[in-house]
Image (tube, rainbow, N blue to C red; front, top):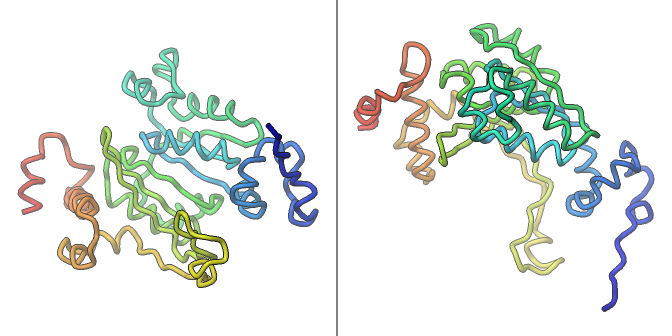
Amino acid sequence: PHRVPLINIHRSTGVSEMAGISEGEVAVYDRQLRLWGVQAQQRLLKAKVLLWGLEGCNVEAAKNLVLAGVSLTIRDHRTVGIADVAYNYFLREDDMGKGRAESTAKRVQEMNPLCTVSSSSAPVGPCDDVAALSKELAAFDVLCLGFGVLDFDVKKAQAIDAACRAAGCCFILSVTCGELACFFSDLHKHTMQERSGTQGSQPGGKEESASQVEEFDFPSLEAWLSSSPRELQEKKVDDSIVLVSLFLAFAKSKASGGPTREEGGSFTAFCQ
């Protein structure tokens, strides 16, 4: 059988477009460069992401982001327990009692030495001073927040989202429970350069030629939670999202902290 030669990225791409990407990075990210192009990879290499809270979704996000070339700061003030070893595949039994962030970060770093992976064990403060928090978050492009690290305190999550907005940092909140997961994203103003064609469509077809730049305004976490279930249903939001919004609204109604396992009956009454 004939062998199809691989594309030579150095020849097919202009020198100016390749600025900021070393030969070593081209060798490592070769397939990604072919998939989403040089400009997208340059943005990934420059991105600074804060993963705050090593819940289920953030563990997987750490792996995927670092393999894509994104530099990370992993923040979690909690220590490693037996449950963490069970679901966080970066942890080992000999990490028990050590910091989650530090133990995880060193093994995430091993997956891609070209990235910078740091850790922080700073505790979650009261989050009352949004201005001070925004200065802290200004060093990052994206914050991926695991709800569990806040003890499911919605008011703190809203304050952190507000701080991200002030700092120009995108905000993603993940809510996970066993095999169930949901995430909320506040990307502020997002510009979409082009839509991907439907699977099986031909290049240069009607769908591709109609593609144009679009802008989207994302609501804040507070704005989303201020919407009633009826408003969400009228906008044909998926029932699972309505359920999550009800859960977060119930958590927000608590005087402090998040709901406990014993409050299932109270949550049912709240939904009714």
